[in-house]
Length: 128
Image (cartoon, rainbow, N blue to C red; front, side, top):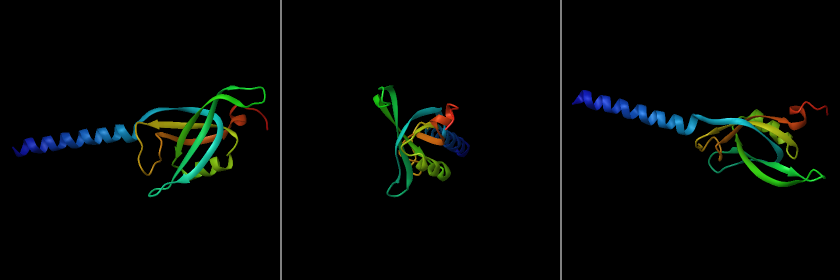
């Protein structure tokens, strides 16, 4: 009986560990998003996290005004990246993100974690 309970406990720990890894640490997708960095702030009651918002425009008018757009909400965990994003507020940027299956309190409000950012004119190879 003791052998059975030990094996059952090991299997349960492995299953729970696998679920926690898949839910909170497994990278579901990763990629780039480009748009206007509209908002970036540090917020939270218990854990302060960096949260941002990019406007992704699909159709622009002749005056470079976004006509059809959606918002991309993201979180940042690294302070260095957060400082870089704060300096680029109001500009068109390209961010690299990883998407997790779920969020953790200390990691941010969204499953999208941005790990790098560059101004879009540099990403396209244009001169300033």
